[in-house]
Image (cartoon, rainbow, N blue to C red; front, top):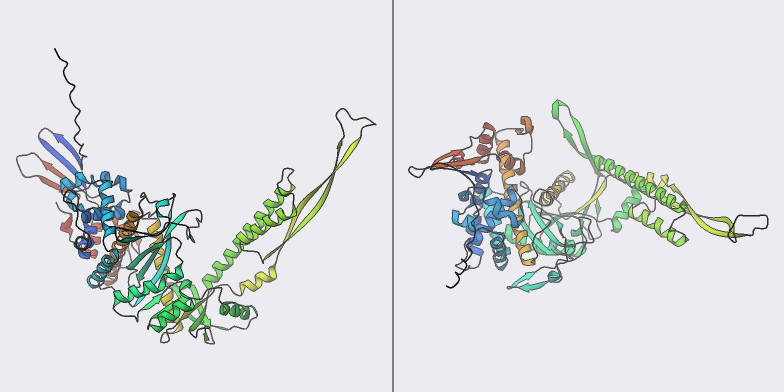
Length: 587
């Protein structure tokens, strides 16, 4: 009698459960999260993101279970709400209502990190530049975003790992791949590789209107001309005001914009001769100031001056003939003085620690050049090289020891040993610091705009820190790094998705704050204990709806009964201000 063949194990793929289900007899209760998805979907629909993605993405294999456009929008929703890594998105999505993720139940069960990775590959093979321009053009029309002032800046996306396959720029699937390599790291991590992330915002609500990624060794002064050309194509004109940092202030960049009827405002670098000459005159007391603007806080019916801005009385021009304006800020002067005091304090502390190490019997600094090198490193790292003078003092120490072993007697011979030790003394140059104090709070702007006054140009430039807030949100709220991807093409596509994340976030905040202004609301009770919030953020709105859920009760014989968490008055008020219909939260 032959042996029975062992039964084959069940190799069918285990389907991940979606939502939470509880059974009681024949009844089934299904619970799903809703959260802020209806609000995010409202803006995704107004932006026509799914439609524009379908138009730009290349054809897909018919065997794909989750279309790339849907997978990319699930990734977008995840980054806005939860910021899970790619390998956790499937589990995250399983707890939400599939229809609010734009998926069917079968598509939700098939969602995986591998599918989202293929969707990123699909986005890379498309024309990302044309897609971004199409999205921004529609955004401008739909949300009536003005392009009178455009603010540009860049940051670095830091990577942990080797990324040897992306050491140089290359071409893949007809598209250019970037080089993940070393460069000037703005996260103060020169030991790590990076990419450069270039972003441009509109002054109208800080809405992103353009982004571009560049190789990690790209310098900022090489990016402005190409960025400005794309912005001209987007705006359909060249007379918008282009605001950027000091890397724009090169003779070549400014000449190109000026010759093509562009208008710019930038900061004059400290390396320019005009800067050195002006600060020399300032130290000599040859500069006079006049007040042009005061930043005032009128809270509690009390007028408190937060900052006072002044400018020079005499007009000045740069070497190229552009308008050069010097400003003085009292608040910046306080911060400059505080920063200098901190540098001096850290430098003296480091010198004291070095001095203690020199007196130790196990010191490694036994040569003058080694001591001088250590002192130079301290003064250079703390940026106080010309403010602290250090003297290296050499001391000869004599020591006697027995020539041999044993208890010493009157005939014991002793050997003289001579060693050289070093000590430090330092002195702070208070006269030089007093001269530096005269230059505290000073910053120069260079522009080819003639029709705006000194105050108007200052207020335009003061909007530049808005872009730094977007970069801060990119790196903290949305955690753009670490990147759980190895393929550079997928990384480039992921950075494009992050641009869409910033776009949705900024439009949500702009819509809410504009509605508050129309309703003449100074604040909303969005903090714990209903404390007022004067400038509500997208993160605060998303967290406010985090506890909204949907429960579906079915028994198989009748239509299912749907229960949705009752919205509070505060939540309903936010929906009304955002223009989101409350019935979006009904079953």
